[in-house]
Length: 414
Image (cartoon, rainbow, N blue to C red; front, top):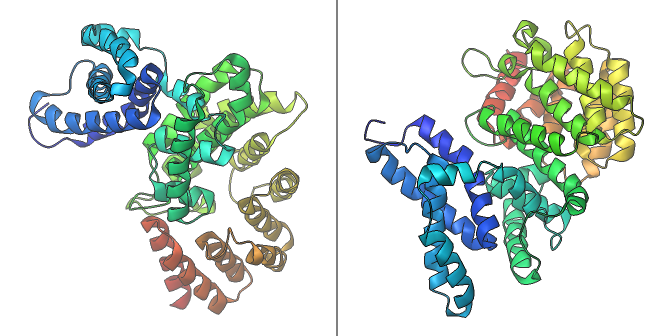
């Protein structure tokens, strides 16, 4: 690589490798907090060295070596851990060349890290938050958005999660098969949130982050390989494929958001749609149905429609009604209201939205205003629609969504 600043391709490579390196270092040393610091130092070292020296032949092994040596320095500084230091020193000082390290770490350390982070010392919500940070590389603000809580609350939750692991005495390692099954629900939730942030970025100038979405799909495939008969694992993978199939059509020529009913469906990935439909069809035929399977079924109905007008909204409304019975997620209620409006008219949808006004998780959330604006526009009440489009634009932290909502208000005001 030409000497100079770290280029975009290398930045993407570092983001992709970071959770894999963290998984390898945590698995080796068992101290999550110290390993996270060591990996951050290795990433900084790479950002300084690689522009001058070029990207090494085995970048993951390079990062593991540097992070491991940082961990060794840390262990050496702690006299209370002399025995552990000796064992670590014997391993690290005799590290093989990078090529050998790379071949020795071919297993997917990110999958290992997924299950490691869903630790029994943590509540499910704390485990999910920590895993989003470690595996997904999401910022505290992005995680807070996913949980519908303030950023300060999420920062405290992640800090407490790390401390709980440290004081629990439970080994931070890949669980046995039975324990992996127990942690599966949290793992799936993590992958779902990582994918959502990748498909529709909640913060910043980009509408979507394909690196996050692709990694979530890759990890979902790996988990599906571990649990081939689990309906919810298959459902989540199907949901990701069916949703991600629309990715190219969601962005206009200038990077603007294109809503579902305005998308060029010839741009949809038919191969991904076929795979997703086949997955969800097989898993629904097995009997027991979970929330990811229902969401995948809804995505399949959208993807199989030849146009927006051709969408089977009664079926979508019925599926959301089932989903509401098994989930206390206000976003499900929001989407059910949209489907009801498409079936019974905007007045019905607006009436259903009233239940969300008393939900603290949705207080001030831009999506509630955005949906209200859309339904008021459907009802012909343009003044109310403009007011809610503008309110939604003020509240969103996504620049493309802000621009889209502002444009909708301006269109109605002209």
